[in-house]
Amino acid sequence: MALVVLLLAAPAAATAAGKQLSLDPDGHRPRVAVNNVGTGHFTWTTPEPTGFNDVFHYCRVAQGAQACNASKTYAPGSSDLDGGYTLFASGGRMLLLDARCCDPSYALKEVFSSANGGTTFTGPVSPGHMDGSGDNIIGQAIYAPAGSVGRAGESILTVSNVQTEGVTFQATGTGAGSEAATAKLGGPGGSYQGSVALRAPSTLVAIYGTLGPDRLYWRRWNGSGDVNSVTNWSPPVLLDSTNVFSTGKLVSGPSGIYVAYSRGATSKRSYLLRKFTGAGWGPATVLTEVGNPSSADLVEDGAGRLHFAWQDSSGKLRYRYARSGANTQFTSAQTLAPTGSFPFLKLGVNSAGRGWATWESIPGIHAVPVAPGEPPYAGPSKATRETFGSHELVLHSPKNCVGKGQAFVASVSGDVTIKKAVFSIDGKQRAVVKAKPFRATLGTKTLGSGLHHVKAVVTASFKKNGQTKTVTKDLAAGFSIC
Image (tube, rainbow, N blue to C red; front, side, top):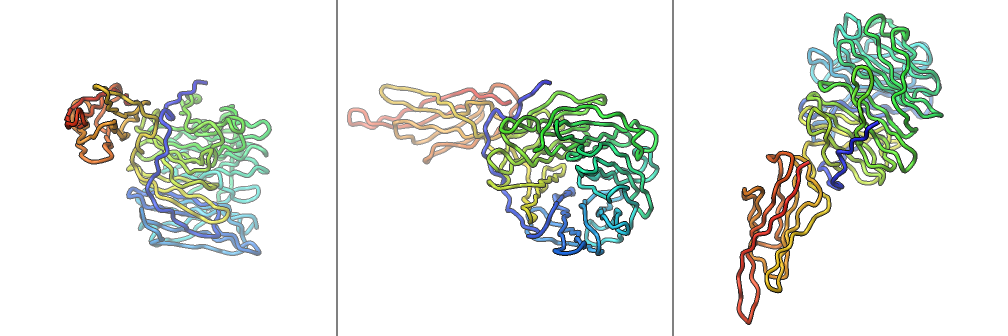
């Protein structure tokens, strides 16, 4: 397997702006979906201290806000709650999916519907339930438009994630019904990374993991027959080895279907990205450092760009995204939150690059906004020296390649008194600096890949034989955009 290391050329320590939001001190299993203006639609659960009366929570938070501007709770009583999702449906509707187990009278899926973006809801209605031990949908849930996966109406596609039960897939409608058929994709021990992705109308792929040995498998619906019958799915095929720290995730969108997962032993693992070719998976791109990354999530926005968040080896919550829908080169990593613990990490981002990351702090639901922008170059610098007599001026510029669109700092120093520094890139003036520190942040948004030149025209003075001498020196250095 080829490993294409395109992402880590410049060590990044940039921090993304955004105030952390605390949603519920007792919450579990948060998820977030983001609309076209960056509003976060959060769902989570809270367990009752006794009995079986788990509460489903929904909260709508505008980008940059610190409180819900719409909310909903639902606690029908006498049931465990396996998870919930916000799903954007056709016609501008928004659905809330809630799944209950394990009492037979409550082992069902429930759907609320909103026509005003989450301000008010109708329902719930139950489209059906899984067999087995209830409606576990902790793996994933996605919306499928009418006519997808061989079904006339619109559907909700879910996959379970219960190690003792195995991976179970189910498609149901969004309205009232009694659907119960399911496709058992993986047996017991093969469930901790259940995920599905759909390129409507008929390309449906699922993954699941096994323990001892740790392996990741994939299957595909054959394109005809009942999608809820496992006989209409291809046999399991090995995708790759993995590990118990991985949170394998499938996504789909305009650029295709992708999978992200962790591979490698403790202290030597990393997250990899691969694209579905229709018959298998393309070469791997490294998404993280090699070490102990964990708790990752991958999303594909409406423009086909991938976004990835993870807890890095030092415990920081990190985030990067693809620079284009080709999804072959990614931004340097931003730090969304300082060292901590970020289990059940979930990410939601829109086509404009705005969104939210949310996680469970065992217990407690927290979130931080995500915004577009390339963090500045944070790699090593090189020194270009200009000597004259016994004196020296130094231009400091990037040593490693600079990411496309990434800003960098250029500076000058020396053993003389600097009066002014005029910085330019490829002959175009960018900044005039007349005070300490003599440095400037230079953008690269208009620059293409390849070699470029940064120049500093420095005016400086020094003492010689009791007199003040003034000189103007040109210092130039090459740098690359990668």
